[in-house]
Length: 149
Image (cartoon, rainbow, N blue to C red; front, side):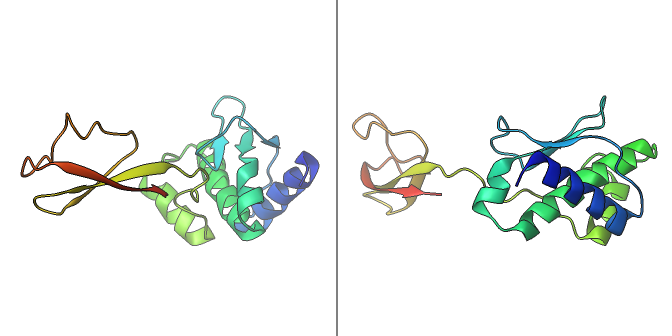
């Protein structure tokens, strides 16, 4: 999908879901890593993560576009446009936008198991099992596996 196709899609969704025109710029931004999109308060432009299109289907992208358009239209109307505001939550629910972006990056976690109480511990960084112990019973830790989340 190109920036021109994205611009046309955002304008179409704005007209259909919000019954208001989108009069600013919508582009893909390669620098966005964990977020699906971004609304710029000063310029009123929208940026979208191209990974949403690559990893998911167009319905996920439409949900992210609706989320950013909620910020856009509420801010221009002078109403509560932040995530914590009730007006934002209501408009988001009304239009069918996503509250959170879908997971875009995968992370590796190391899984350890306590030899005494058998609880599992997940950490992003490796633990020196000779130096560190279980936090609840002070038992020794054993490396089990690496998982991708």
